[in-house]
Image 1 (cartoon, rainbow, N blue to C red):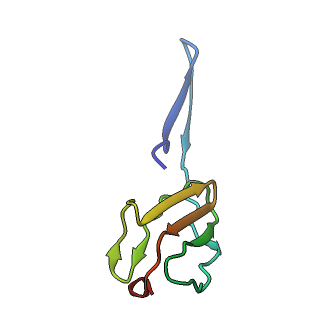
Image 2 (cartoon, rainbow, N blue to C red):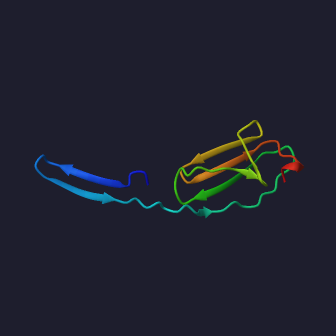
Image 3 (cartoon, rainbow, N blue to C red):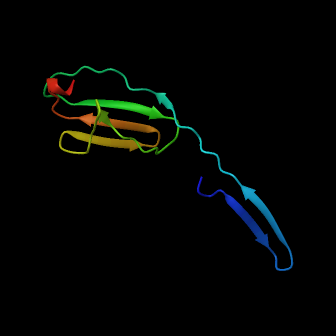
Length: 93
């Protein structure tokens, strides 16, 4: 979007101009999160797939934003975003 502007080709005694308008592609989920079950003490991975590669993802539990820690790990490969929760407890439900 930041590339939207007027561009000029200048050959000294003449110029040609064109306006470039870049339209953002809306991002949507190609694959939404699926419900998971896990036993206490195990690890679980939640995965979603986005329509646009490398879209910034914010993971949340309820209304609380999650941050990378020993408990939570985030991975993103192109359009696939993953949340890994280690040592799950009943409070993680």
